[in-house]
Length: 116
Image (cartoon, rainbow, N blue to C red; front, side, top):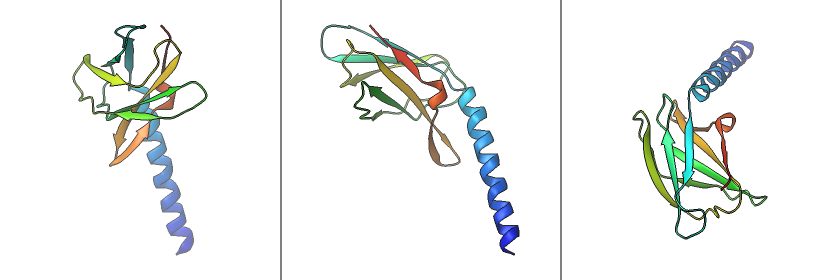
């Protein structure tokens, strides 16, 4: 019985991982900063992929304080402007977060690095 349960669990985990890889491969964002010098630090995020972006995770410098911000609904090429605490004069990463089976998944392979 233990072997059967373990096999089922392992199979489910492999299927979930494959689904995550497929969905993340079809997830895409574009990033733009409205003004690289003046505050506020407005970042434009465009959903150019096939799936709804639940959040955007920002990472900057060696601090890695992640900032998950608002839901971007799935609409082809919909752009949302976010007011962030990002310093646009330094390079930063934006990582899309999608939902798969009720769980939020960070698509690290789809990160976008932006430098003014």
